Length: 135
Length: 69
Image 1 (tube, rainbow over the protein chains, first blue to last red):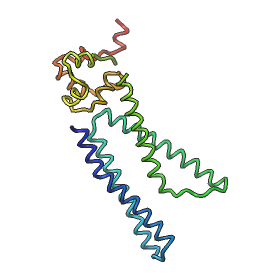
Image 2: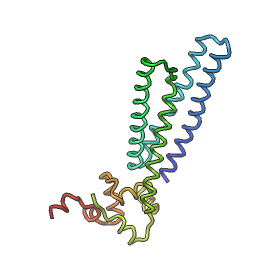
Image 3: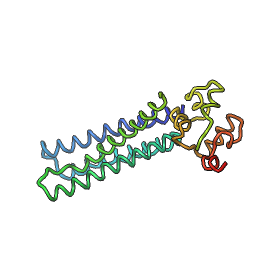
Image 4: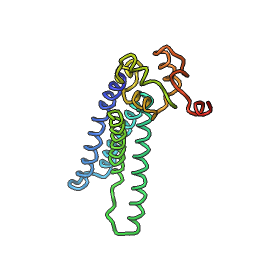
């Protein structure tokens, strides 16, 4: 079925891209803290998770164009929800950091934060639909 | 927008998943249309009408038109 094929295709992009993203970030953080690797090398390595993010988003965009219109609408809603939540948090935390002595949150946490909220809101929307069906 | 999709589906003894397969959409989409939570696009509405061999207006009812009557 079309939806399942789209999901499988998406997971084939999502899983390796996420893995590269996580490994890339952990590698750069580890090398910066525990080794004497040149800064230019670290800057070049920082491009790895950034590029994987583009691949990941491209896979998500393709997934959205391949699923049916209702699921697409649900995806768009959950993306807006994820963006609203993460951007409002980033704005609030950014300002609070200026006003109070708080530890700065690395900006790359925005990506997993966004995907966590987006994925959760999409799952909740699907679950609500399933509950209605069983009524 | 109200619709008779659930009745038409039941008359043919099709499940939501079955109807979804025939229309190349997900079961969730059929469920959302039946519950009135989602109004299908014009191409999907035509596809549904073709499947049931009925005019669109016999499947989907505009609630504003219904109130006027």
